Length: 424
Image 1 (spheres, rainbow, N blue to C red):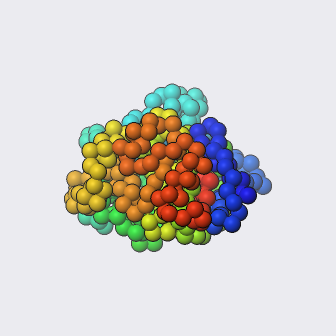
Image 2 (image 1 turned 180 degrees about the vertical axis):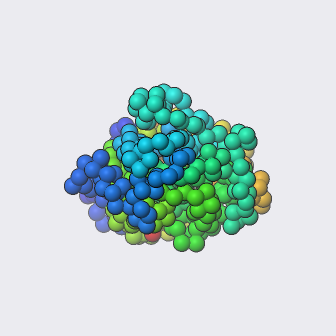
Image 3 (image 1 turned 90 degrees about the vertical axis):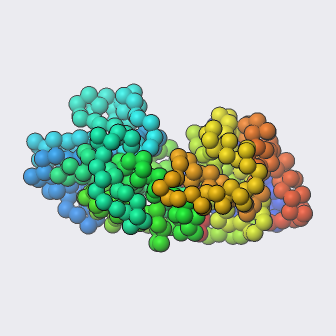
């Protein structure tokens, strides 16, 4: 028997499955990787050896207005480590530089002062000039042209008016942009709502290149990189982190070239080969990522990448906060025909994209092709309203999956943490 232990909330889901039924257990090596240097040493080393650019201190010489784009409260970037080192680099090159830290909220709510203190520490919050981006504040936005896709490229003035624009961030698998980090600091980070909505349009989301771990031919990435170049994002410092949110790898330099290096490291630890299976069991990585059903769509894309046609995916996500989005929930509760729903998404003009449409579209794509059994603490009726079958243990879910497939010997692939792997 193969014993499987899956993250679930702050605890685990456990089960034993006959060895002969297991087709694959797909795990990331990243969380077990132990670097030889400390977090600070890794970031310092990256800043001392930038890829494709001079050192940041050299780039800062003669640059009076410097803007550092920083992630917001929704991203676990270890800014307490990265930001002081970037500030030191800039001031070594130009002690008189006027530095602004621009918080890249994208279309999220504004980051509070308490959240800024938690992110940077009190010293930086008290002593540095920090501006929180607002995607709807037209007085702080400038239209600088057209993206390759045809959408308007409207970005924050503070970024555009900088003599030197740099960013911090982290690189992880992303379920439609391929990877987070790098160019995403600009789009969606400091873009207008109109620009973000256009970039996340139904046609792009429908592309088979808009998937986890895919950059080549990814239309969403293409627009993002173009916007970063147009904004003159000259330098990035990005890190890869483990499950404890600790830096295990760092890159610095050109917004594209340094990002490629970080992606290559991530691939070496997270990439796994697809093993098409009739049943795939996965999770959204436990707390804090599995608090609602909306967020759990992300791990479903990992299962999707290794499923046989017509298969069943079993998702374990505690979802103690319920569905996670009223519009998301309403969309599926009120429309039982997923095919019709998908056609409506695809018929939506790019400029009419609405918030969270992409999440609903990806979920609809999954429901259209596979049956989903959902293990959670959400109300069973909510799970059913979202076109899924509720369950409360792996054993119960497997019984239901076998009935759906009509095969008690169906092969099972297990992805313990569906948001930490790249299945290709």
